[in-house]
Length: 334
Image 1 (cartoon, one colour):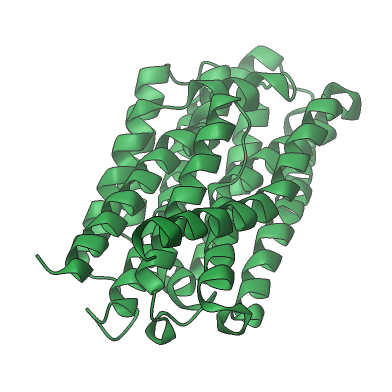
Image 2: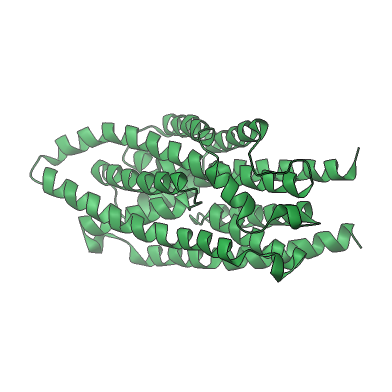
């Protein structure tokens, strides 16, 4: 078998492994609030999330094209496939580390940071598209700030509308509403996050000369969607516990507001072809909702540690990918 096809096969397996891990790492984004308020039983929530993730993953490709072409031009890289391998290994390592410790870090940050680091060390600083990379990072930075503000606004409006009603009646109604927002949140997660693996596979296909454009093949869409759905079905219980119970005590109306706010941000980004962090969106929305409920109710110490993990993910993934690329280069090409 041709060497290029063997290496491409490794890339595809790693990309699907990343998508699988992304699925169980980010399951909490969609279902943590609905599980914590008992709007959905855990098994039902995971089945809903897996199904809607799969449907969402097949719906759009704009984010995949951004990932595939904005950080670097794959057609101009002689070792683009090796760069992708280093990217995926670094991103997978960071995802597993943060999952193990229950830290809701961003798979998107890990992937983007790792790709930039692998391109930088593997093809030189001139090969890195700084404008495209900066645009992506700006989207990753501003989206959680907007999600926080939107969560605060939506919760404030809901308080004004339902503040004088019986808490029992309000919670009963919003438990039903949470099923719908959990489904919406899962769908939007699929529309954005699954495309990142699609974009990386397409990046490798163009770099290897298998295709000459960034259009995502149907088999790539189906493979990535399936991997993410299967990963989602496994569930990430440690992160669900952090997201659903440790930031502040979430009630159904809070979960509804947080899910609706974050889903709106993610869907807007998908339509704009921008990769954003679903983790950042939902966590920031929860913080915004908690602040609107009662500022002191939010455990800001934990929130601060989560924010620190956001800040350090891109540089850590960048350096980790550089190290992984060097190891690959030493072991197989020298």
